[in-house]
Length: 124
Image (cartoon, rainbow, N blue to C red; front, side, top):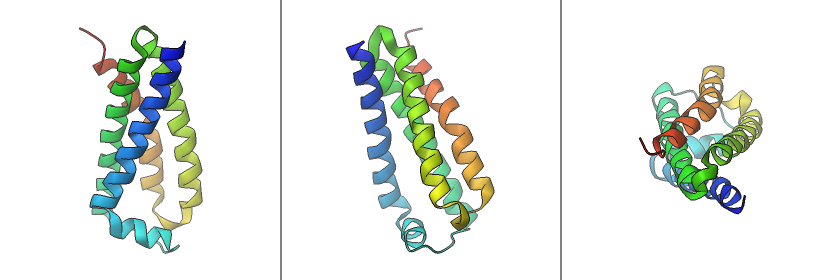
C-alpha cells in the first residue's frame, strides 16, 4: 500500500515538474499572456502545449508504475484521476482565455495517456 501511495505521489510530482519546466522553457509567452488574463488562441503553441502534456503524462504513468511495483495499476489510476481533477480545475480557471478545442483535447488525453504510460512500465 505504501508503494502505491508513493507511486501516485511520485508520478504526480514528475508530471508537475515536467509541465512547469516545459512551459517555462518552450511556452513562456503563452503562459505570460494567459497569466495576465488575456486570450491566447495561436494554434501552433497550443498544439505544442498538448504535446508537452502527452510527454508529461507518459513519463508520469511510467514513474507511478515503476515506483508502485506490484500495486502499479491502482497507483496509475489514482494518479490519472488526480491529474484529471487538477486539469479540470486549472482549465476551468482559464476557460475563456483559450479555445474550447484546446481544453477538451487537453483534458480528454490525460487519463488514457497516463494509463498508456503505466502499461509501458510493465514487463512484457
